Amino acid sequence: PSPILPFIPRFYGTREIPLEDVQEIVKRHSAPFRFSRQVDKVPQGSQFIVMEDLTRGCKRPCVVDLKLGTRQHGDDVPPAKVISMTKKCQDSTSASLGVRLSGMIVWSAQEQKHVFVDKYVGRHSQGIESLRDGLQIFLHDGTKLRVNLIHRYLDKLRSLEHVLQTSFPYRMYSASLLLIYDGDDDDHDEVGEKGRLAKVEARVIDFAHIYALEPGREKD
Image (cartoon, rainbow, N blue to C red):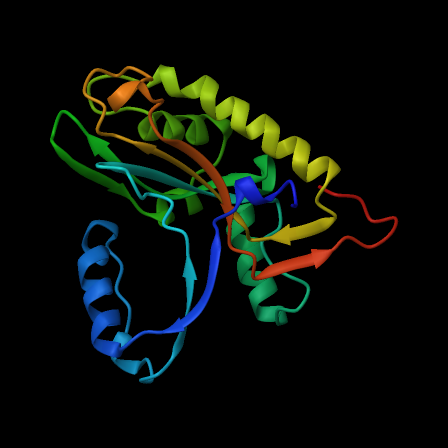
């Protein structure tokens, strides 16, 4: 199996989902993320991609979306899209750091509710300090910084970096890195119920613009 598989969601194929079920799914999951979909315009009998739920098992899922790369547009997009996406990179940390905050949802133990940060905050933030502050928000539950999770994320990211550098002959544009943990950890210990480590995930998503690396063309 490919070394990249542990770092991407599982793909379960496609299936037809009745429109009323699609509407119920969107209604159930859209509120905390403040998004809406015009599901009434989805034709009956449409095929949907079925993928792994990366927050499964989390009682209070905390997720941050980090948009990767200094360039966001693929090779096949129209000129107008190139201009708009290049500007988004220049106006954010994408151009200087190769990553930008693209939204998060975090459980606040202090307020006993999820706190949402939308993608537009990251689009207009520049400098390493703004990115650092955003990650600190992600790892803070309102009472304490979850320092116990940092080294586990670093281990996962080092492993992912090794795979991308040695075993992934592709170039990705506009992909995202999702960092996930369960905020329902009252004692802030690494070990959760039944002595198991609390859930911590690092997965790459969004592969709409991925290209085989041409001979002689270096990776970013």
